[in-house]
Length: 255
Image (cartoon, rainbow, N blue to C red; front, side, top):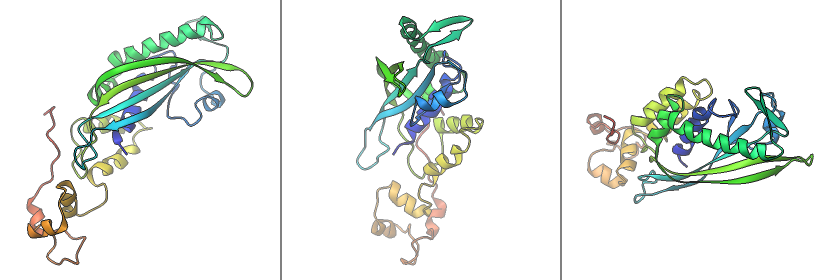
């Protein structure tokens, strides 16, 4: 329903990569966050983090579902390997208090990344996240089919984010910055044209129909204003009057 949760997951995974003891083992919304990473050939015996968005509430204005702001719960699950892992030649056991201590340290590293992480991702985090209202953590024990349990820590970051861009508008402001960063990332680059189209041309409509939707107007009202085609049976061609009308995005506070 919203592009903002997608943007936040893209930003967060890249902002955290290499900034915690999980290293590059940061996963965006894995269906199976346990057996999948365990079976993959990443660094043996290293922690990993799975990132999700659980709740997403939008303050809607009349019928404009993009609203004015969004309340989002960004959820991080930090997992410990089954037995131990090594940091700078120090072996940390994950079967006792060592695992809990490691999870505390990773939590602190996550908070540090939100402030001092790599550019441009930390800069985008600060642009898309207006404020953080609360952070909650709780321990989780994950029971594997083999009978072995893994230590895990759930972290819920309740935040207020910017609203989604309006439909049929040019890409502007923070979204331009996001797409520039994504275009330089091989894994994220294929999403740029898809997300751009969802903003600028969400339904492949002619300009007069986009204007009708953005103005929350009706066909008779648009026709009375001379903004529809001359022939009422032509529902796809633009009206000549729209050649002098430019659809622009909301004011960019950064300009």
